[in-house]
Amino acid sequence: MRKFYILTILLLVFCHVAHAEQKITDDMLYSDQYILILKSTKDYNEALNFAKQASKKLGLKFDNEYRKYSQKDGIYFSATPKEGVSEGDYFPRRYSGEFITLENSKYYSELAPGYIIVVAGVYESKVSSHPALNKSKQYYIDAYVKKVNLWMGCVH
Image (cartoon, rainbow, N blue to C red; front, side, top):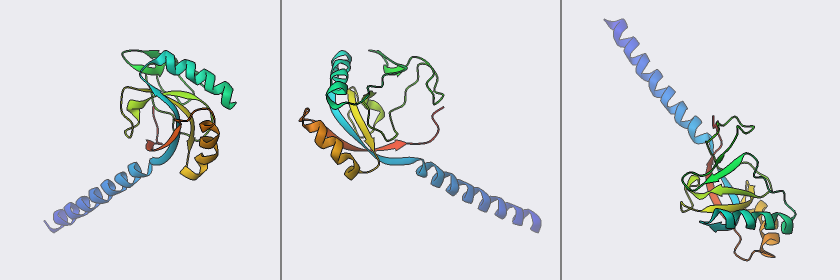
């Protein structure tokens, strides 16, 4: 009987430790990032035309590869992108870099849902976004940087 109690206690301790490790791991897979937003609109075609124009003015690549739009689903992947996401799925832009993309606002918990946002950069700190924000404001006075907490773990 004593062995049973010892095994039960060990099992409970193990389960508690495993749960704590899982929480730490999940928390570590989120990261605060700063996104440079040039425009927010409910009109996809307006956002698309704006993004193409901004790409030329700012000298940044417009990356719309693998993306399509439907009024029902918003932006979604039309083919399997490099990260292995299935066709029809979507996940928000999350890695550092300066290029133009169109994103669904509903996937950023800090933003109001229902908008197509024109993103010109993702940065690891607010300070690192300042040069791009200053350049963007020369053409787009309403450009701003928003701190968001993004899932950086596996998406497939």
